[in-house]
Image 1: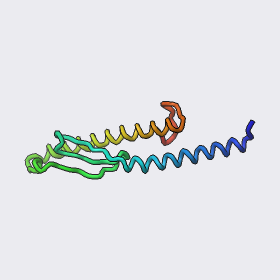
Image 2: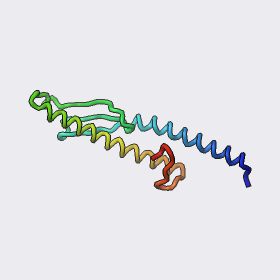
Image 3: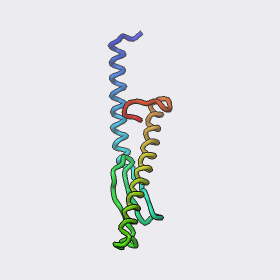
Image 4: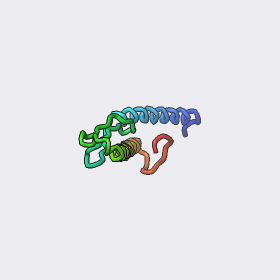
Length: 113
């Protein structure tokens, strides 16, 4: 049977490995790009899977002052669509990482879910 010291050392190494993988995952998520759209593609929002907004594109046909409220609604919808897509990609990446670590589905490790 392992000594308490050996078990503590193994636990520390496991924690360091998990922390390293989490840091790598955060970098990976920030590099994955998703696009949210609204108004049939008239408004597009690009975001990282981490949720950082990278850009907004508004079709020229919407640049009428009378349509200001519509454009604002479409931008809001595109942001929400991008955020939803980012969340889905992030969740899939985290599930893949948990699986590669041998953790059972649904296992909630602080910082993983």
